[in-house]
Image (cartoon, rainbow over all chains, first blue to last red; front, side, top):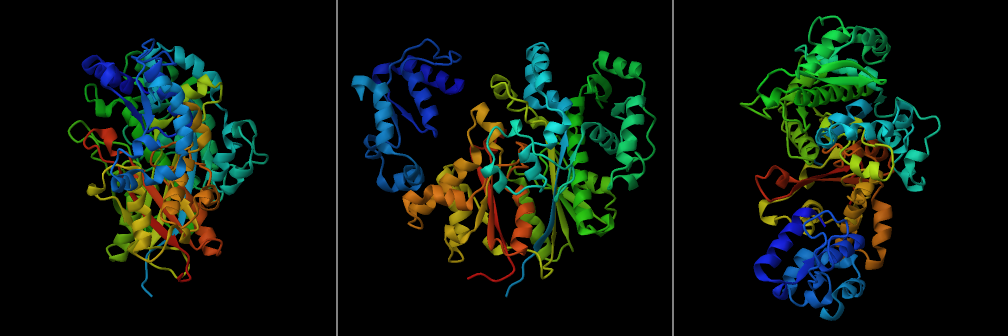
Length: 105
Length: 487
């Protein structure tokens, strides 16, 4: 995850507390999704950004998971995300990110 | 049947400049920050000319192999040199560094670029044997008589007092690029070298274009440069008109010109503008020229160093296209099927592709499967993947296929088949505007003429947000069509 995004997330946690935050990912490659999920749960694996050694334990989801799809008006979802939904396996994303959510997901 | 302008010919060239990699924007900054340590790491990973020549993506770029060759070739491509690779290809050439240094000097009218006398004595005769440059006045260029080569002491003195940057070749200093102003950063040496590199490489591409057409420079009516460099001084940074400088360099004495800029989408805009100027009868013909981008040399070098690969971004790439009225033979640029991205569409990638691809096809009652081949950003994945940027063309093709699936034109299970059939492997160097779809024009022209393709679509996108003036992205597309009217 790029350093700027890490900084933004850290700042949001400092302002609002981790209890009221959920991270929603939109990243493309599965590998990048895993790294981002690790960064906001256990800390930056590259040990380079503001979240290096910072274990936030935030619940993390992907926008293409079924649980989130229901939160978005269907016309808007179709307009902005219908294309991506064709390219991803929503169940695979849930399994992958479920592992990072532990009991929270 | 309505007539449309045609693209008659295209030329693509490379200049292999390993010793300029250090002046790419990324390495330049990193070398300064590391007190030169990075330069020591870079040097052993730079490729020699033979390796760059025999690199399959470069041979595809020059037209000595089809893009399909990359599908079949095992990676890493850099470890499998092409046997019998050729300097001159169907579309242009890959020029060695020592010759391009001389070309840079020819393009310089302000005594900015100094080369050593010994170096010139060895390199200039090579250039005089060049089929397109022998007639250019034995090193005089358009700038009139040049002073002789300089001696090393004078060059080193310029560098030592901070007024110039060294130019190296074969492990030694062979010249320098001097600043034109002490306090105007727009005229510092690094910027002037960028601008000269664009001018000289763009001019080389134009010479190849004219040779392929067997047309005299005097026949060109108008030039549009789609190069990205910001030529100007501090009062008009980016003021531009590199087009006119390139026209002069090549001897297009009956032409004028101007620049079209739109980040990486610039070349597609320029081709559409060129076609419109021809269609309207404003000019008899328009040449679109895009010069190489020094700033992007070595852009992904950190990734390449980490993976212990050669530094693959070591070539300047340039291109030129001839747009003219319908000649009854060449593929037509369908001005009634141009795709544009309106402000109201925002920045979502899905909206972008619907605007650029679905909408212009729908206007003619066509679907995504009515286009035989799509050209998107054609970045060579071997360059981008080690730096974490993924396979850019593949991601774009998958998005196109997903839209076709969403619209029920293909099955979801046929996404990969759509990509394989209508896409291609990226073969262009990561030179910003250069990989933006249009290098495939050179491959598409013969395929469209010979009936191997009926319709090809060229899609380019621009990252406007990089300039911090808008959050918007941008894009434009056009269709090239074979002669036979297709239902």
